[in-house]
Image 1 (cartoon, rainbow, N blue to C red):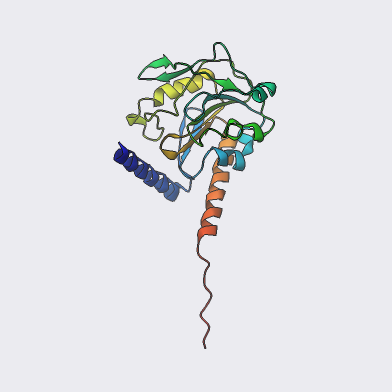
Image 2 (cartoon, rainbow, N blue to C red):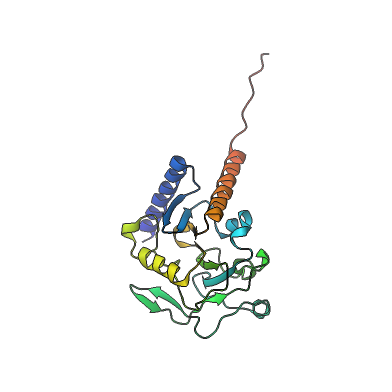
Length: 227
């Protein structure tokens, strides 16, 4: 299994690098109806908040996974307006939609600061296997499904991954404006039906990659001087 995982990671790195080289995008991109999506192996959730805070600020989160599990709210979280409770179940597809035992979705107030994001306040959790549905208005449902923890979730190989269609149905059922997950096989998935926001994220990630490549490149040497 370890060798299979390593092979899969190397394959996906090659596919992402090819997309960058051919299309000039910071990863693999695609669309499904009104949603546009990006998969990148060069950025993570911290980078999304740092480079494109407008993707999160002023919006509402439904957190279905943090470090592969549920977000357990602290007293400080609840005082700031985060909540969960009865009816906030999460589901997973194994292989059909089933209730995920002892798990729940946690909901945010309108985000006024990025300092209170779950991946910053719950530092005991790891930096991956996070999944957020993002809304411009408070979500109208309390039931959500989790996809980030499954190896059968991959948007760029449509025919090979059985969770793709259930994912798109779920995204439309909950009427999410955007979605982000960070976890399986070391890639970040971001999608939105806001075309302007999508272009902003692409531009921000592309500029960051270019800056990183320029800083890593060796300085050009000047013409050799004659003695």
